[in-house]
Image (cartoon, rainbow, N blue to C red; front, side, top):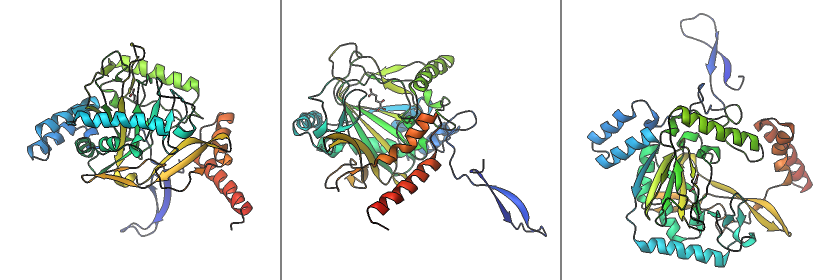
Amino acid sequence: MDDLVKVARVRIPLLSSPQRVAIVRPTTMATLDHQQNLLSDLWLDQPDAAARIDLRRNAGVITELEAERLRTFSEQGYLRLSLGEPESLFRDFENDIQRIWRERPANVAVSSKGGWLTAFSDSDLQGPEEGYRIADFHSFSEAAKQLYVHPQIFRYVELILEDAAVAFQSLYFGYGSEQSLHRDPMFVVTRPPSHLVAAWIALEDIGPDCGPLAYVPGSHRLPWFEFGPDTIVVNKSIVSKEQREEFARWVEKTCAARGLQTQTFSAKRGDVFIWHAGLLHGGSRITRPGATRRSFVIHYARRDAYPERRANMRRRLDGRLSNVSGRTTQLIHNNGYVGLHGAFVSPTPDPVTAPWWSRVPDELSRRLGLPPSRRVQRLVQRVFGRLSALREGRR
Ligand SMILES: O=C(O)CCC(=O)C(=O)O
């Protein structure tokens, strides 16, 4: 409470003496309202969204087709479109996938199913295997870059966010992910969480047996599961397996209570599925063993709110796999639209190895069973950062 309310002495005109007045000044922005609904100031999340869409349509700001898609986005939490890209773009993309396996660069990360993202150069993966994924492939491939900053997709993302947008990360899937239903802000942090939009692009024709994208229409309006007080983010080291299982049961129960049903997105190459931060989605079961399901996922935020891309991956340093972090503000441009490069784009300084003590706060809260605390994080950073600086002879 003391975080939220500051009491100040202010002089109010017409009153003869200074009065104590409570000024509500949120220093930590709440994520959910008291009914666990996501707080959102997006125009398409407001009760009069349909009327606002009509207004823009009638004013000629958007076309009828755009209005129709935005209505679906507002009511169901997603919209679909098809890119008019030639086959050669998708062929180039696939050639670059084969090339990355040959070249195995140190500045792009790959992971096995459910595994840690690791630099290609240091990964144990011998080749593309079921469930593998590549992070920020757009840093490596020109074809991926074109899809990452694609004008047709950006048009919708910017209509939704009502502002200039930035693409800030991408994920390539060679096979269906079979990921359980989730909401993106559980893993991808933007401020506020409602200002996150995702696009999924089919890189080949995808039938029902390849584990297509699964989604629950209308689920963007469901309340949110809290992993801690006002906490919707899953932090691997803090959220227990039991809590994740509880979340899965909650999803099932909550959707059933509202009659919401999971659907799948069987797609043609070049089809795009754009979804709302609150939409429950995941990967359906692969029923034809070995079937590929090439797809590319991109996340977008408002440009002003996302100036820098940061990411972690593992690198083999001194013979051991260690966590390293990278960051960049380097941009990729296309027709006035922009995307952030991968965090490990070269030329950059060598990635900084995260010091061992940066794991102390997470480890502490995990062992003590307490929710993560920013105060503890700041304290640890201050104390150990100072000690390291002294040891290195810095003042
Ligand atoms: O493509 C999939 O199977 C799931 C993708 C997904 O859930 C995500 O990128 O958030």
